[in-house]
Amino acid sequence: MVGIPSRHRSLVLLTIVVVVQVLALAVQIQHTSSEGENRSLMRSWSVGLISPFERAGAWGVDKIRGTWRHYFALSGAARENERLKQENDSLKLEISQLRGKASEADRLAKLLNFRESQTRVPMVGARVIATSPDANSAVIYLDRGQRDGIRKNMGVITADGVVGKVIDSFSDTAQVLLLTDRESGVGAMIEESRIQSPVGGMGEPLLDMKYVSNDDEVKVGEHVVTSGMDKIFPRDLPVGTIVESKQGSPPFKYVRVRPAAHLEKLEEVIVLLTTNPLVLKKDPETSGAADAQPSAATPTANAGKRSLEPAPKPTEKPR
Amino acid sequence: MNDAFDLRSGETHIEVYKFRGGTILFVTILTLLAQAFLPVYIPKISILDLPLLITIYFGLSRRNPSTGLLLGCTVGCLQDLLGKTPLGFYGIAKTLIGFAASSIGGKLDTEHPAARFALTAIFFALHQGIIVLVQRLLLAHAEPWFTVRLAIAALVNAAVGVVLYFVLDRLRRS
Figure 1 (cartoon, each protein chain N blue to C red):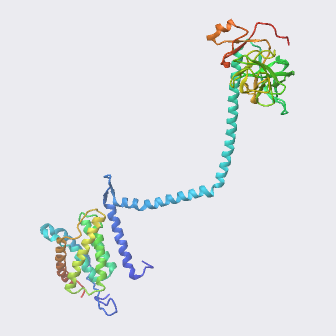
Figure 2 (figure 1 turned 120 degrees about the vertical axis):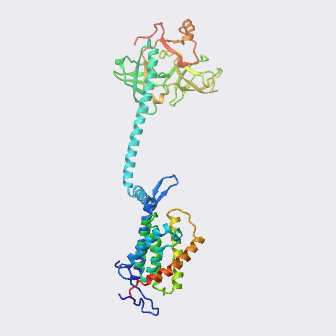
Figure 3 (figure 1 turned 120 degrees about the horizontal axis):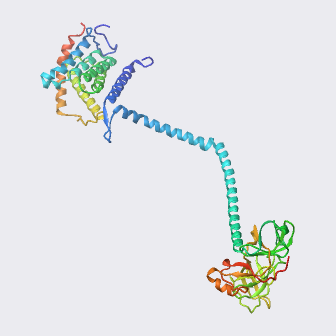
């Protein structure tokens, strides 16, 4: 016991001897736990003695690891953050593209349904490839032209309603004047009251129903359809919905119409390759009545259920 | 080492005794055997703790704490080995008693019979206290700290010890 003062040697020896015997006792004595299991006291003591250090060690390691992760490894987090942001942007773009494709699929399905329901109407689908470069004119360009049979003054529609008319046709391109253009106009009538009046653009999203007498009763929410009088659009195509009606400068009312077609976001349209008057086909339940009045069909409240067929009257001018 | 010499050069004159060769070993084995076999024939003699008495005696005589605690440890562990108690049960108690006896023996004159009687009784009680402490702490046995039997045993052992010590004094080197 080198290095230990002589007066303390016996105490050290005493401590050692007693501890050794206590440990020997602990090895021999079986301790019954609360669960009724027998285990040596030494084992219980060892676990009890070691576990606080283990817990402290685990706590320390967790703290160190947490500190490392939260403070020192921020460069990795920053890189991961950057990568996640890029991935997020990429996913957003992908979602946007998918939404666009889904929307396009919906539109194409709508057009296809319309075309299939109007198999006897000559029409051609076209994609909008450009718009007017100036803000004063509402013009779009289509990817179809004379090669596809498109001529000047042909009507352009979507499944929702009238879009405009072809004002010029090239070999593979056609220029369409939208209804909202100041120079645009379409023969129309109020669906319910059959009051006729041309509807024209004003260079803004709403249309102007120009010549409705102050004496006529016009209600907001009434539907406006084509009258067929302009010889461009067949009769009873949806033009829009009246959103404002009030007394105007005599003798005409001030009537504003919201276009039925979504003119501000056109992507696919249908070009009617005829100007023959079309008759309204009734729903199957009312087909008998429709057959009785083939040319001057009674308008229905539900324009979405209408279908068009060319009238047998051969009054179309050759194009 | 002489048979007796001054432990301290101070004012107190205390002697340290040595014994003939093998005396401690022989006496230890003899008392252990006696402790084991005598109660078989004389049941009441089990009240005696002969190994404790020789631990106290040699501790008081040798007056070296290290020697005293090692002797107590050896005696106690042998007692455990011969009995059914776990090793260390009596070992711890007699280690502490050996240490205490030799420590006190180095400071007090323990040759007088009255002092021996008193110290033996105290050490016996202390020994039993350690035993009870070990039982309570390690074995979870709720043994009582004090009983009348314990008091009687302390007195009996002290009385027997005084006689035994007188006999053992004869084994000292002269």
